[in-house]
Amino acid sequence: MQKKYIKTVLIIIFLVFIDQILKLLLIKNLNINEEFVIINNFLKFIYIKNTGAAFGIFSGSSLLLIVVASILIWYLISEIKNNINSRLSTLSLSLVLSGAFGNLIDRVFRGHVIDYISFTILNKEMAIFNFADILITFGVLILIYIMIKEGKNEKDNNKSR
Image: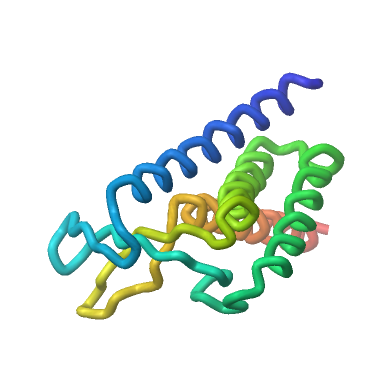
């Protein structure tokens, strides 16, 4: 296995480990729907069992979500192996993979995803999420940045012709 892949696999394993440790700490210290306030009126931990995807959509469709996540994971792994040469692209896909693996582990072994981070902004409680969701979000944001940068570079190259 090439050095690049070993590093990538180690990063993914480390991030999935962190995700699962955080969830285990939450399970050990909070009951379902119990809150632990970190910053009053802004940030709290609350133990929620999410049987759906983001924002609770597809609630109760665990099998479908397991299949979709598995296909996504397989696709991203094949992309990293076959088509990705940039470190930034590898990092972004590794973040998405780590988050997808973390939530997939929950779905397979618990039947639901554990969500626990809750922000209140302008007196409105935002969607409750977890560390794996943060990894996916940052991975996608990096991918968007890459696509915008590549689109700009391609546009600039076409103008110079």
